[in-house]
Image 1 (cartoon, helix red, strand yellow):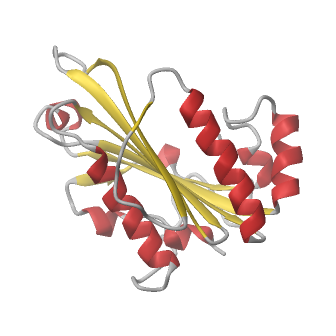
Image 2: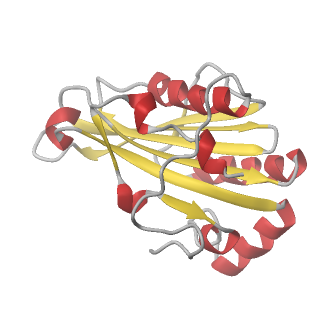
Amino acid sequence: MPVSRFAVAQSDLGSAFIVDIPATLQLTAADYAKAKVFASAQEGQTLLKQWGYQGGYETGYTPEGREKAVLQGGFYSKFETHLFEDQDGAKKAFDRFASYLKATSGNQVQTAEPVGNQYVAFQRIEGKVPSSSVNAVFHQYLFRRGNLVSAVLTYGADGFMKIDTAREMAYMVDQKALGKATAVEPTPTSNYTPAATPKK
C-alpha cells in the first residue's frame, strides 16, 4: 500500500489526457462492496473479507477535445487496481471479476498478449460516438500479478481502437508492480483526504 502507486498516471499517458477527478478514489472494502460485480453490498463485504481485501484505487482520463478527439483516435480510459492479503484471495477475486465480464451482454473475448499471472480481455461495441454515426467500442483488460488485480477500460471509436491499447496500459501497471518502472503515489485529488471516507 498505497495501491495507487501502481496505477497509470497522467505522466504515463502524456499531456493529451485530463484526469477525471470525480472518478478518482481510494477504495476501502466498504466502498468497493457496492460495485456491480457483486449482487449486493452485503455480498460484496462478505466476499472481500474472505479474499483478504487490503484496498483499492480507481481513476480515469479524458482526452483533450473529448468526443471530437475520439473521432480522431483519442479515447477515454478508466483504471482499477486492488490489493489482497495473498495470492489465493487475489485469484478468487480475479475469477469472480472475469466471470462477471464474460456474462456482461455484448462482451466478446479477445486474444491479446498476456500480462501478469492471469489475464482476460474483452471488446464490446455499444451505441455511437455522440454527434456521429461511428460505432463506439469498449475494451477491457483484466489481469492478476501475485496479490494484485487490475482492470483497464478504454472507450473510443470503432476502427481506431483495438485491445492492444488497453493491454499496453495494463503492462504499465504490471511493470510498476514488478518494480521495473517507477511507482509513485499520485498527488491526492480534491475529492478526498487521506483520513476521510471518499466522497461519492
